[in-house]
Image 1: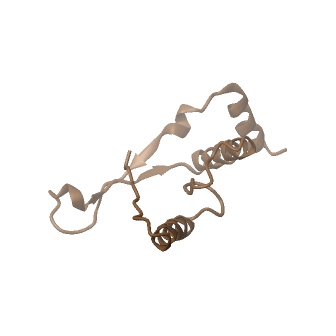
Image 2: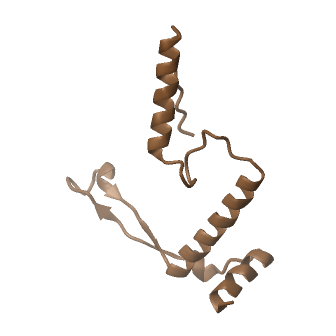
Length: 113
């Protein structure tokens, strides 16, 4: 087992995530136009490579757990393998067309919470 694997496992077991890995470099980028227009600003956060490794390890463990408990709905498309935005669009289109074929008036609600 590599030292990095041991470190990630110890972090998960003890519930400790180093403060050094929580640090991010913030950069302000201007897309164009006037610099006073907030819509033209992008603010990316640059994290360390080790922080991204921890993030991916946690995401993998969390998704494995949620999938094993059948916690996620079949129509949950975000952050899941083989569930892309194309699948979401195709599912919605299929729903709309099926409703129209049945003489119903289809509707969709997209809350941005």
